Length: 91
Image (cartoon, rainbow, N blue to C red):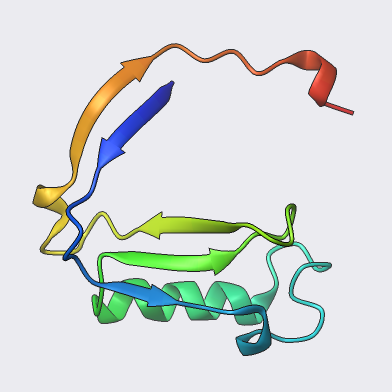
């Protein structure tokens, strides 16, 4: 499914920059240091959102949502629609 969500502007976000990560973070699948960082972020429940660098698109970011965070109730689904991944993009 393709889901559009709305997140209020004033929710907490933690930012991780490439310089905060090990040199090989984007070349090792499930890098243990990255997994640990994510696990600690979820467990701490410091913020609802975690912005991390994209391993696929170096100039882009991904934003993770902690579904256990107390502010999760403020995240609203705006639209949902079926999504079919284009087979031409799979190698």
